[in-house]
Amino acid sequence: MVSRRWRLPRSNPLWKMFSTTGNPDTVTPHALTRDEIKAIVADFRSGATNAMAAGFDGIEIHSSNGYLFHQFFSRQANLRDDEYGGSHENRARFFFEVLDAVGEAMPFDRVGFRLNPMMNRFHGVSVDEDTVPMWSTSSGAPTAMASPSCT
Image 1 (cartoon, rainbow, N blue to C red):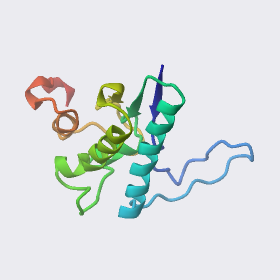
Image 2 (image 1 turned 60 degrees about the horizontal axis):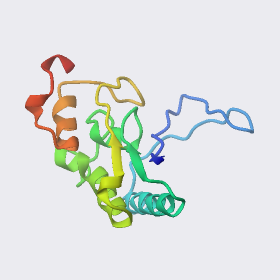
Image 3 (image 1 turned 180 degrees about the vertical axis):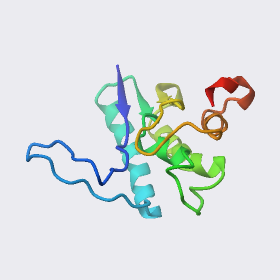
């Protein structure tokens, strides 16, 4: 049994959310601060620790469908100009920091991650000419393995 770990994406301020109290407005997103990124990394570490304590065999980190890591990978959504934006390596940094933290809590052979670079138009993320090279960096796969028709 595997526990899936993910972080919700940024909100679209034009959307309404469903809740037990009705349909409240969403908030306008902001770029995460370094402290917020560190806290999220710690949350993933804690989640991995809790999953193992609860008897799960492993975890899967969900990194597609417009969720937070997918947005960091995307040059359309990630407009940062610090160590978490710009180059492929920088945009993948947050994801790899989480993988490292999770690896402190459980063996890496019990960690999976979901990547879906072709999931299009979710939360400001669309497929473009940078998609395959970026996801190749994120997955460690050589760019030559990706089909040119994917872009």
